[in-house]
Image (tube, rainbow, N blue to C red; front, top):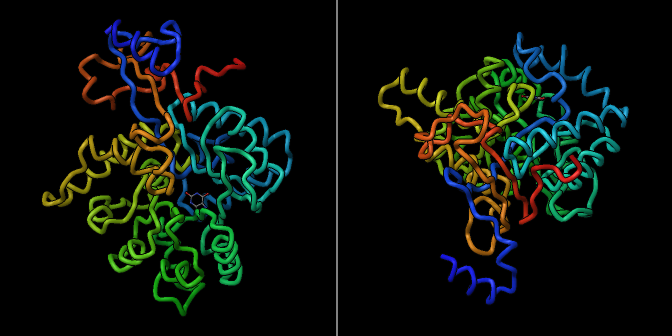
Amino acid sequence: EGKDLQKLSENFGFSPSAVTQLQQHEFFMPGMIDTHIHASQYSYAGTALDMPLLQWLNMYTFPVESRFQDVEFAKKVYTQVVKRTLRNGTTTACYFATIHTDASLLLGQIANDFGQRALVGKVCMDRNDYPLVKPVVTPRFAPSCTEALLAKLGEIAKNNKLHIQSHISENLEEVELVKELFPNSESYTDIYHKCNILTDKTIMAHGCHLSDEELVLFRKTGAALAHCPNSNISLCSGVLNVRNVLNHKVKLGLGTDMAGGYSPSILDAMRRSLDSSKVLTIQDPEHKTLSFEEVFRLATLGGSQALSLDERTGNFKVGKDFDALRVNVASLNSHMLLSSLTCPLAGDDRNIVEVFVAGKKVVPFSEA
Ligand code: XAN
């Protein structure tokens, strides 16, 4: 082993003393990818989950989001979000900000400063200022957008080859509202499709109530879904049948959907995905429950594919960036059992000792 190190260091021109050896009980895993998270909703995560989506938006979400006009407020919250998600092993995050341009730009700057890979919307800009942070066109969802706005955003995204993110078919009341607002459309998916919103760089959150025909349209356009099970349960929105989505070969990643979901952790999204899948099996024993390996894949490579970032991140394939978590299953204060080496689901952020994005160590924080 020592001999190998000597040879490698000569071949690649590094000093053997610069090498850190993994300790017993440690391993590297690919960094986790949050395909759907509202950075602006962090301040009330874990509260305000007592009403369904549309009422929840009016009562809690819109009033809090309006405070992001104040850049100082935005700076405080966005710094907390980026640090908290990084500490939880999120090396890539696809963020919703708010309608405020200054605060959204600030979120991009904060992600960049802490070294997190990110897509940030609302960001009406057409240039990449940061190597790891890109703008993402962000119509909130069909009920709050006219067809004219959706079509214009579709055009902007197409002309500038930009990512797009939005929400679709999260709860039944929302689906009914969309039918009323767009009486001439065949389906919720059809509205976005007609406005050129569905592309192979599009990620739509939820999709709990999509029909098979709509999933076929997702597959045809290359658009992806962000499965956010904590949110779907917390707001009693619905249960996405992930197995059916995978059978339709639709790209799929996991999202925390903070603050519809109360946890900032993609490890939590993995647990909830398994729980949701088991609920479907309880209801229908024929349903093939998701395995741990499948949800692990959704949290890493699946997420990178859903965000069309899989050429850069998602696994340890040679040529991709090194986005990784150093995990210690026996770390101090952790309740994780050593036997969970084969199933790290029992862990939490205490087991993530280091986080790397594009080869740079970003946790522990350098400014801490
Ligand atoms: N639809 C939404 N769903 C959600 O979970 N969070 C939101 O902020 C939102 N806006 C529209």
